[in-house]
Length: 259
Length: 258
Image (cartoon, rainbow over all chains, first blue to last red; front, side):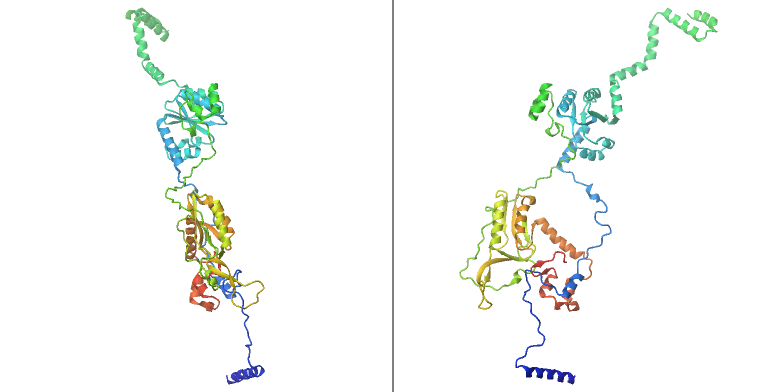
C-alpha cells in the first residue's frame, strides 16, 4: 500500500517538475451532439443489449393466421334492403298459390315485355328476387327444398290461382325460358309434374266423373228397368244362354215359367 | 303489339302508361338480373353536425406580436418525448397526428393552410388549427462568422411539436375517404413523420399499445430493468429513458417498443 502511494507521489512529483500546470493523462473526447439530434445517435452497446433483451414478444399462436378459413364471414347482418326483399318474399309465399321458378337465359327486354303482357291477362305476375336473398329466406322457412332450384338467372312466376295451362302456353312460345319447378298449393312439383298437372282436368269435371262412376251401377239398373219388360226378359234369356250353354234346355223352361 | 315494342324502347314511364300492364315497382319491372346482390350501405347521419362560421384555417403570423423580442435558449426538450397537450380530438373527426418530434415554421404552416383551404368544400367541411402560431425564436449568426461574439440575432420563429400532437383537425359532413387524400398530401410534406387519423383510429392505436403492454410474453421489460437499475444500466440511461421506457430517443419514436 505504502509502495503504491510512494509510486503515485513519485509520478505526481515528476509531473509537477515537468510543467507547472498539468493536464490529466486520460482525456475523454467530448461529442458535440446533444440529446435531441436530427440523426439517430449511436447507441451505447449496453443500451443496445437492453433493448434487444426487452423486445416485445407476442403471445404464441397455435395456428398461423390464414391457415383455416374464418367462419365469421358466413354470419352477416342483413341490411335494410335485404330485409325489405324478404318481407316481400313472405307476402308472395302467403298470397300466391302457384309459384313457378323459370330460368331466363338471354331474354331480351322486348321478349320479357311480351311475356309479361301475355301472363298479365291471366293475372300471373313475374317477380325477380336475387338468389342470395332467396336462398337465405328459404333456408329459414318451410320451403327449404326449393333452394336448389335457384341457381343461375331465375325469375318467379306467381299467381293467386293455379293457372298452369296458360303459363305453359306462354312458356312454349318463348323458347329460351325453361321451367325448373313449381310450388303449387304447397306441393313441390318438378317440370314433368307441372306438365302432368296441366293435363289434369278441372276440379268440377273430376267431381262429376267421380259421382257418375259411383252411381253408374244404380243408374244402369234404373235405366234398364225403365225400358219395356220384354226387352229386359230378352236380355236375361240371352245372358243365361251365354252363362251355361250345356244346361240351356233346363234353364230356358225355368226362365219361361218365371216370365 | 308494335306499340308495346316502341314503348319498351322508349322508356319506363311510357311503359307504365300502356294499357293492360299492371303497375309494378320500377326496380323489378324490366329484367335486371345481377350476378350478386347490390348492397346499399347506410348513409351516415350528419344531422347533429354543426359547421362553424369560418370553416377554413385562419392565417397564422410569421412573427409574434411582441413589444420586445427576447432571445431564447435552444431547449430542445420541447421536441423530446410524447405530447401531453393537444393529443386528443376536440371538435373534428379527422386529424393529422405527428408521429415524431420537430419544429414547424411559417412556410410549413402556410403550406398546410393553403392546401387545406383550397381543397376542402367550405359548405360541408371545416378545419381548425391545433398548434400555435410560431412563438419560439431561433437565432442565426451571419454567414462566415467565427465562434464567439455573443448569441446571434433572431432569424425566425418556430412551433415545437412532439410525438402524438394533433396538427390540424377536420370535421363536418364528410367521411374519411373524401378528405384522406388531402390530409396525406399535407402529412407527407411535414418535417416529421405524420399520419392521418380519425377518432376511431386514434383510439385503436392507443388500445393496441395497451394490449401489447398487457400480453407481452417477455418476462423482462425496459421499465423494470431501468427502475431497478439492474446491472447498473442507469449509467447508460438518462432520466428521460426512465420516464419513457425506451419508446423514445431524442425526437424519434419507436413504434414496436412496449
